[in-house]
Length: 395
Image 1 (cartoon, rainbow, N blue to C red):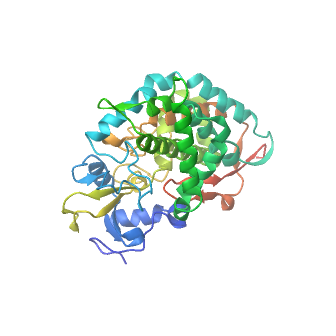
Image 2: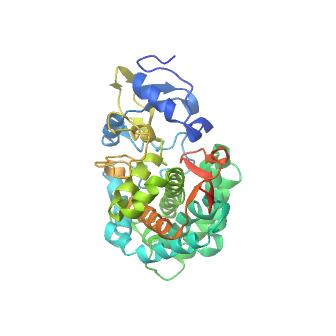
Image 3: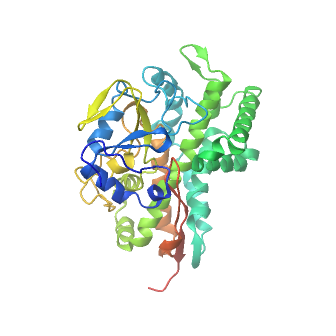
């Protein structure tokens, strides 16, 4: 039974429970123990209410992303800090300035033609009838193609880099096993190859030859930034895309409404992102002794911000467990908030909107074939590894 203040519980954000069905856990914690304590992964506190997560994310002076080198992953990643995610302002601001020009709204908007071409080409390959895995055919590979193109990443090692990232992001043991070191070797080779090449007009070049406060980045800093960009670009958008397909497969009325109302597409995309919340948990470190809802947290304590729970908070969102395609306002936290708001959010939104438009235009009616075969991948990002859709079915 949960107590009112600082209850100890068996909570593990890496568990299969939190991948497949976290909502009842989050609901109970929000209502009865908004600040909980778990001994998993060395022990940490969990903030579950919207207002608390929002305030903590905006207060790096109290809840640090650096955390004396521990970073935002619980347990910590072996490579850290991941610039700029695991830095606090003002250091964070200087590193973020390297990325912003390549991912701002104007630049991302100019990417729409080729992003749309990718989505249209891949959706055209869906079968006209029968059952297929939309995760394998689209929601997993599509964001990878986009991210690698934005980065200017070498084509010959993309498949293996993807494999190694999947391994280390879904299995803690793989970080220090074969996958982690192999991933680092591959990326070190990419950096060396780019340094030896002529300058190019892409995101990878901006990082490899970047300067912060007048000093060039060293190889370790470039490696850390590259890891962050890959982890962010290859998983989170996949999670939101799959949830969009799942909801529309289960709710043909919403699909029909969105077909008839293109003016709702932007709101629908934001709502799918809120509902999916691929980055459901992210860590901080308490800088000083503090107390929240009567629960004391000592300086140095690890604290997990449950963004997924905040985005289902019934005090902020009517019918939070449903997708309301015209929800407005929608102050969700799926992209984070404050200085650490996702630098790739505009690119993620573009991929979501283009995909929505292309599936509405070119995909026959579909439904989820078998909910029992949906496979969630548990790790630092909640995403669907298998989602079987049936097209051309008899109504």
